[in-house]
Amino acid sequence: MFKTLIDTATLSGFLDDPQWVIVDCRFTLTDTEAGGRAYAAGHVPGARYAHLDRDLAAPVAPGTGRHPLPDSAVLARTLGEWGIGAGKQVVVYDDSFGAIAARLWWLLRWLGHDAVALLDGGFAKWRREGRPVAAAVPAPRPVQFEAHRDDSLWVDSEFVRRAVARRECLLMDARSEERFCGDVEPLDPVAGHVPGAVNLPFEDNLDLGGEFLPPEALRSLYHTFINDLPPDRVVQMCGSGVTACHNLLAMEHAGLHGARLYAGSWSEWITDPLRPVALNGDEGMPGAGR
Image (cartoon, rainbow, N blue to C red; front, side):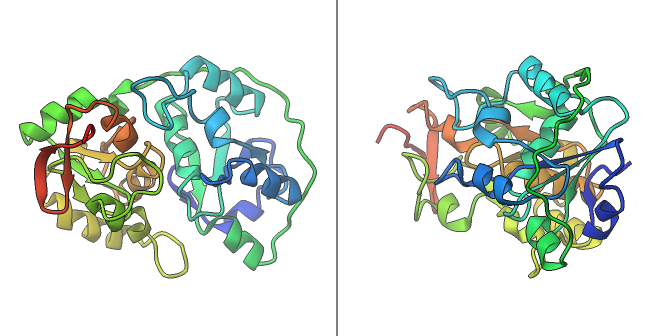
């Protein structure tokens, strides 16, 4: 059972295995249908397509972030329609170094399905190596997906507010340094970060070729932030709870188990103007309303 990463050579040997399910998660925030068009043009043979907004998130509502957690019953039904059930090995991929596909990796674990792995290097490496690509859309046989939701894997805004104030956890932000510092903000109406958070952009999990660093290198990277803090006292966040899952996957691959997701992340935090916002060295100014 593959539970974190899988390489392209291994996946290529299981394309015809009915116990394996592949899901294409390509998506672009600035053009939400680009991933679907890319999938239609060519994908790993047998792959289903997951749309971030429609399949991997609930509709945005007042007080939520940009990608609220999906309703677990709706997601379970979708997973079953894709043929994902007990005993199935799932492989997820995208063309953005795992930034989107890691969301489905985490969601499956949230619903109790641990046999899920991210394709290391993604579709870019798959194509670069000349591996097969298909345009045909599969017609999977639906199965019953039995969800066993584990809500201990994520936290909400109130938990973050209390835990950071009391120094009960370490909050790590997976966004770019420029967004974390508030120098730029291309997606959300308020720039900055949650006071007390530290910044570890998800790209730092990767080598220059776009593949994950080895487990020992990832352990060393994360220990520079968490020191002797138990991993289960780490909370990962980002802009909307998507790329934070990349950091969670990296920690799991490094053997640092138990970190949690701040599901609403920055885009939810700033919906309340009373929640403080930090800009660079300014660590406590109320900022969502200014």
